[in-house]
Length: 228
Ligand SMILES: O=C(O)c1cc(=O)[nH]c(=O)n1[C@@H]1O[C@H](COP(=O)(O)O)[C@@H](O)[C@H]1O
Image (tube, rainbow, N blue to C red; front, top):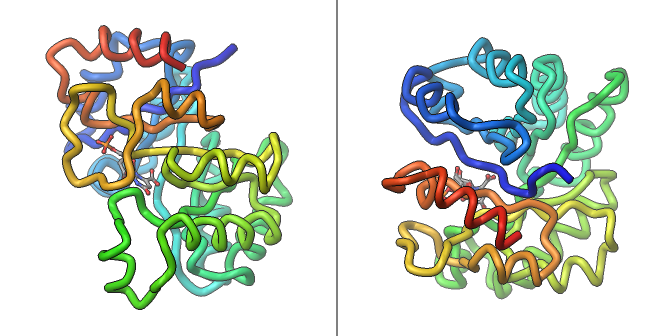
């Protein structure tokens, strides 16, 4: 079975990211390219990763009017990536437009929606005008994503049990905010360990700094894969 670990390649340059990726194999992880690396390294870098056989999650969190998001999703799908995402807060019409935009592709990327960022807690969420508990808002947006035809959501592992029950076994639950025991929480709020995430029924975990900033990344990768 392929790994359920997605490593966040949050590096400033293609050279640094490639140096990190060099010893890795597509059997032990998938790779996530986010804003920082995509802005500096661009689509050619993404093609280099797919060319090496990696499944790539292009994490650009599209959030705009439906037409703009649909066009961006088409462009992303053209790169041959495995997964892309939009913000569920963009609404049902935006998510449906994203879904429809992928229809012409033979092997379209999985399309998932960000619910409530894992860095947000109740106080920060309230600051945006949403007075629901984070878990309630995650549930609301995940149901909207499911009814809009998306393949899954980004959420914290803390919401995984609830969403698995509600939305079934095939709905993808992709969970950042993963912290192995003893690692720094950093700017994340709703965190869980890899083993807790597995028990909660997540589909994939996203892990960045606990691996990329480790003295021995390979040891952390091996341990996380064992925990999953
Ligand atoms: O969409 C994401 O990947 C994402 C959503 C979210 O709610 N929280 C979140 O942390 N992420 C991403 O997941 C990664 C987590 O990195 P670390 O906190 O370093 O493990 C970062 O690249 C974030 O951009």
